[in-house]
View 1 (spheres, helix red, strand yellow):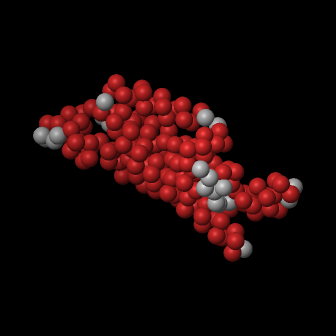
View 2 (view 1 turned 90 degrees about the vertical axis):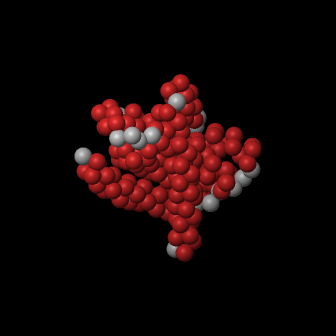
View 3 (view 1 turned 180 degrees about the horizontal axis):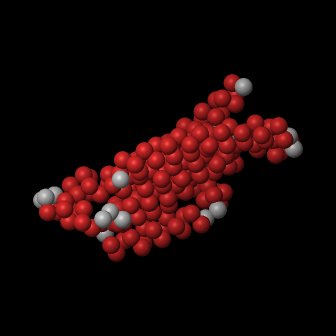
Length: 199
């Protein structure tokens, strides 16, 4: 039980570290896509392309450059989590009503001030939705980290597959499912509050 708890905590920490970095990078790229029109298609195409690479293949490619272990898994999860965050940030910012942008401009706000005080706060419910999707997805993908020497709940699942042990497979699977459901529930509740506040 102690071993399972330790693996569960390790799994969650790895995912949260990756989501933290992907949130910062994703929001930044989403803002750049919005601010620099000719870059939007390039940035969105790149993050779309990353999502089409099979997760195991992406980790294998990263392993060549970064070696085995948790660092490679975290980098892979960051890259895989960018799409919903970048896209939702971009869509949220472009979806801010024009009259609100004009009103902020009329109040003498600079482009940066409009972004910080008006556009990002109004876009945050949609941005948070992207973060939620990325988090739940990353929790599931992280189990394959065992194949590149990373920690987490992939170990009991992999041992179970090797020994044809259903109980061992479920030992690793159930905590992942429970975490995904809990994160989805908690973040959905917070998302609903954000949407109500934005109205």
